[in-house]
Image (cartoon, rainbow, N blue to C red; front, side, top):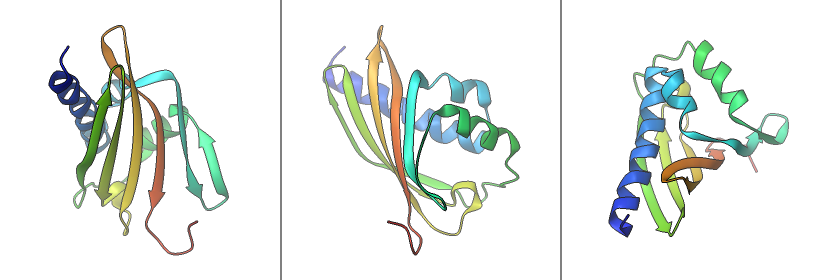
Length: 127
């Protein structure tokens, strides 16, 4: 696969992530992640590390309308079988502040999968 084709494929994975959240498509969502996926960021309890198992219940149970949700991929880079992407989001889960997520992906048997995500909510009092 060419560099341009890899960039397009990674962009598709991140766009599928965006679409799966807002449409609450759990099957599509689960297919995006490597089984050893790790997520990190700050919560009200401090820094947290978790996997996709935390996101699935949120996706299933959210009452968010997603009416004001907008997401934009602001950076994407591939090098061989690894890639990174930055996503800026407004209205995620109907939250009143923006979020930034940093994704790392790896190509496994020709398929790009998300292996990690670090996130930051742009609100006061977060480190």
